[in-house]
Image 1 (tube, rainbow, N blue to C red):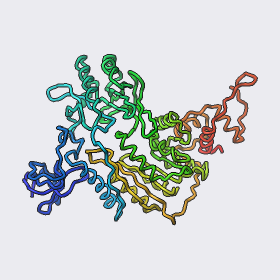
Image 2 (image 1 turned 30 degrees about the horizontal axis):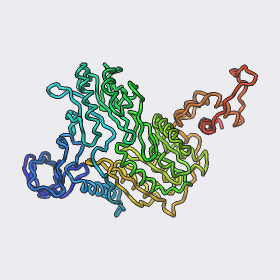
Image 3 (image 1 turned 180 degrees about the horizontal axis):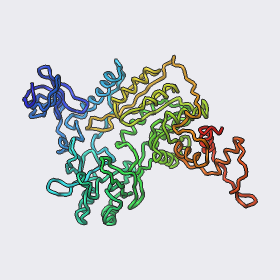
Image 4 (image 1 turned 180 degrees about the vertical axis):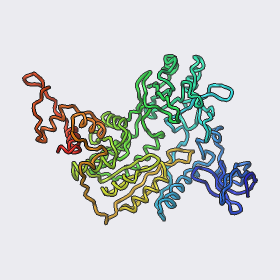
Length: 545
């Protein structure tokens, strides 16, 4: 068997990327767009020793799992890899994908994987769409999605996974660009203006956001774009994001507002969230509520527990759990996300959640060392990015030995790897629940419950000052250095007078203050208790106390 051979075979399995898998003459072939149960003719495109890749030429007999995709571009686009698979079969495929990864990567012989929780309506669920803008071969202005494995734009103004209003918004923008000669960005030359159109929608509020991602500082004819968009029902925010890089990253670091607010709002359950162009927010709010309710169930909160959310983002899971916990602490390495989390806590009047900037494996044990058993978690929740958890974080979790760990994952392969570590260091895998967050794609969200083995001892963690942070102690703890430490670790600013107050509390001789007020009885604002603890942490770090 060699390249360009034509073969006939029956597909008997489906790969992790949605490709059909068939076998002939002892060779395994991977065939895009083929489904289990299909009998197909295929042309071999690439051969290895025991496997190869083939192109689907003809379906001789259709699988009973096959359905007619409603989107005419689903094959070219590649965003919906399994749209031709019946929805019930999609849910079973995702359950099997999670189970197989747990077996083959995690080494779990018979994990308890529940049937995938599906959607009532697996279309029109995405509250976020990012449309690249460019030109077709004839030089016509187009927007849509990149074809599979390319950067060629397929003109698709109304993706069936997105909201119906996307098409109307995109048409108005393209028409305005044509009318005023506003150029699209050209990846090859690095010239041109509009790179992407980002559209977000608040499912429960009906609020719309449009963000122009541009190659430059200013959007030409901005007032004309505002004029055609502002009167659309629900239009709440029109912003511009500046991205002058030559890479593939969609959003740059700077965003400014053209019209309305710089954000929209939406709800998960009864919790309200403020969403900016750069906020991480789940794209399927209905299924997110299903996912978080399952995480809440696995956390098994009675109102007496302390919970640590170690990848808290803008506080979505943290605030959801705070409804049932005694105290929730959230940790995230991105300062802006922590600022959003604190704002979201305030807007929902949630007072039993605190948020810290930093690496979770440093912040959590340092905080426990400073505050004792009261701060130690009965439950830890993690919802890491696709790459999973760092091993240093897994090691810290096992050392701190919470009674339960709830692991939320968007990649079942890295999930399986991390569960293997946790379960070889003191935890039992109790239950695994796949959730269909991304219908018609091969991706699956998973939430897992782990419990501490009964014979696992709790390890008392004590930390020397230099272990509390990745910052190297300096020879002298100046006020700017203390301010910088607190800002980087906790995401807040502290006034010089607050540092002075805390030093006096600790019995340090402050000497004469030559900048003190000349008033007889100057009004001195007292340092909040939260900032007292942050400043004390900084003083310990620098070896002052």
